Image 1 (cartoon, rainbow, N blue to C red):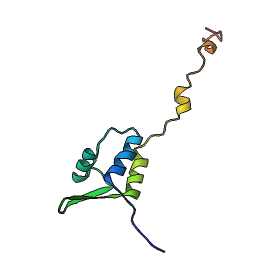
Image 2: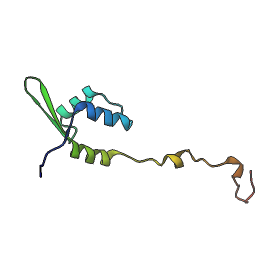
Image 3: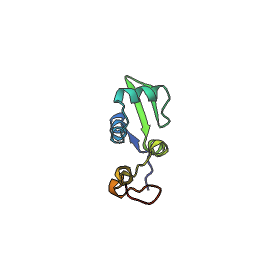
Image 4: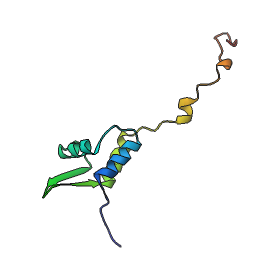
Length: 91
């Protein structure tokens, strides 16, 4: 059995965040990691800046900040012709 630590690239993180509607950029993601604002990635300066983004931590973070919307309920405003007043009469 082989054990490994799954990682993501900045581009993969950007694509996943964008799919969920988060307005961001690869540059902003790098800056947030550099500043320690994202708990799922680290960076260090080598010949150029290197990033390690831990997929498991990223997925847990996404679960904690993502809200699921019931799209059917969101657009189910009902039929106005069936609306009733307090007396039970149709409007």
